[in-house]
Amino acid sequence: MGAEAKHIGVAMAESKAQLMSVKRGEPTLVPPAAATPTGEQYYLSNLDQNIAVIVQTVYCFKCPSGRGHEGAADALRAALARVLVHYHPLAGRLGISPEMKLTVECTGEGAPFVEADAACDLADVGDLSTPDPAALGQLVYSVPGAKNILEMPPITAQVTRFKCGGFSLGLAMNHCMFDGLGAMEFVNSWAEMARGAAELTVPPFMDRTVLRARDPPVISFPHREFDEIADVSGMAALYGGQELIYRSFCFDPDRLERVRALALAGGDLERCTTFEALSGLVWRARTAALGLAPEQQTKLLFAVDGRRRFVPPLPKGYFGNGIVLTNALATAGDLLASPVSRAAGMVQEAVRMVTDEYMRSAVDYFEATRARPSLASTLLITTWSRLAFDGADFGWGEPAMSGPVTLPEKEVILFLAHGKERKSINVLLGLPASAMGAFKELMDEI
Image (tube, rainbow, N blue to C red; front, side, top):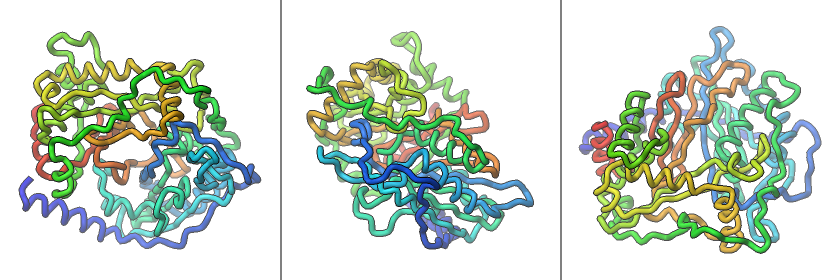
């Protein structure tokens, strides 16, 4: 990417942020609409402990003509109070348990809710296909001056009105409260309440102790996801010395079929999923684009939904993280000297590894070590491609678009379902400017 193109990209991002010029009102607390248990601690499982990052998402509603956003903020606020009766820990605050783990103090004080007005039309926001923290961050409320997650509520909500009559809902949710599926069920339940439902279609199953560690812990797998890998390729200097450029690459069904064909070429794999093929491809391409030394160990991490893999399966509506990290490791030299089928095969092997015993071993590993997965020389792929966030109809129709404000870490690549029938996948990532040009060339070959 030339200096001029880079400058234009930065200037465009800045002008979008200035154009939006969002003015926020004062935050108010929305407590549950009825009495909920207070004064106790709500247990978070070991699968919740290691992903206490704030995930910011935005949902945009165009609004039917003539109706506009009139009453939207009041309707969403009232429905939030009602849904918090069912999801009462979200009205509490994070704390530390006697075992020195994250827990929720059930204070019932409520979720911060902010109303805001943007100086532009919804169309000016763009299509949310690329993270844009400077602009989209204005649509989500972050507690000013919060120094760590203990000072941030589990969830905040902001309703922003646009000049065209549309509005957005911006959410900042702590991942320790739920994974993508759990967050989707919460948002859809909130939307049901806004549409006047008396009961929830999927009531939350609240008891996370079903995922308690065994006593004594039994560690039956090596859990390489926690490995700290030495940086022998000067990545710290590369990331430190250049601006991070965000881009999204759209893979429509034809292109996804070509990626699968690449993964199946050579006959190493009899079959493979779109996720396995695409993950293998981007792991290899990112490794090449970053110019990693051949002897550099590189790790791929991704989450597997364990809900149906546990024995017995987790109950329907499980409120919490039902995902477990799995991993694949290879040197950059091996990865790049082999075809895409080899990388896809390693992803497939990592998926296959996730059994009930593997997941319980992961829970017990944290119990025994309190280790955090290391992101050194790592690519973490997170996939929202199966999450139906467009079911979030609060009475103003389904969202015209929804997406993340930013990626939580520089090592993260996000797969996001795209298009009317959600058959395409957007690959979102941030890379140093020099590496992004190389990555784009590799993607253009497909």
